[in-house]
Image (cartoon, rainbow, N blue to C red; front, side, top):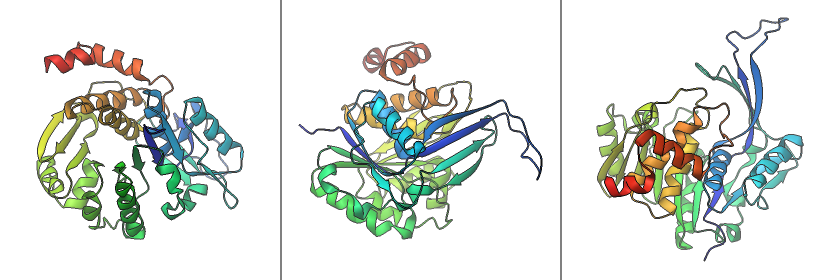
Length: 319
């Protein structure tokens, strides 16, 4: 038996969410807003929080600044039962901060990378990774770190671990085709519809999935409010999303990933993994901040029961 269900490697920072800011101030002006709230941010950290709250044993591996924000992130992770002993402390940078402005509509961000800029898979303590049965990766940046991710994934496979990766938005605009090589060795590969269109050059979801399935045995494509589609071993499955009032979409994709991996790591069928994923994403968008504290296994079950009309166990029997 492994000590952890999942080791998560990647970014953690502070999200300052500014609600009700329709106009940025001009020089010398002040703009009053409806609210400002402080949350844990970073895709890897948000994924970890949701996965731990769903009941799995999680350890986080990243880097934070030696400051109050860094301690806040550590405390929030620890309070959710996440092992934080593998988090390194930067002597060079403060903890990263991302200011999300007007999340109710078209979000704008002001971001300081901080200690996240120091993330380097080559510095990972492989002994910590070996304590888990699965590793979730974030932070892929195309040709800038492709070889590093290939080497790490192959090393993890050699240790008998499964892996998952959310490729994320390519802010370099490169859309590196080497991603298809990485897809072949990652066990569960996450991408959203727009990212898939950029990487494949295809327009429709069907065409994107056909192309991605040539390279990945298990690809999950997030379609936002429309739901999600997965292809496992060439077999494609679709699950529609849930109709929910949208308050803030920050972190919804990371909550989706955690719901899916919760199903995967507990041995569920792909259809059930998609159901969990859509439920976690749906709960997330209904609250400010990327990691709503009320999202746990019980909340997910209640949400699904209300939306689907069954408990998840009944849905498994009835499908």
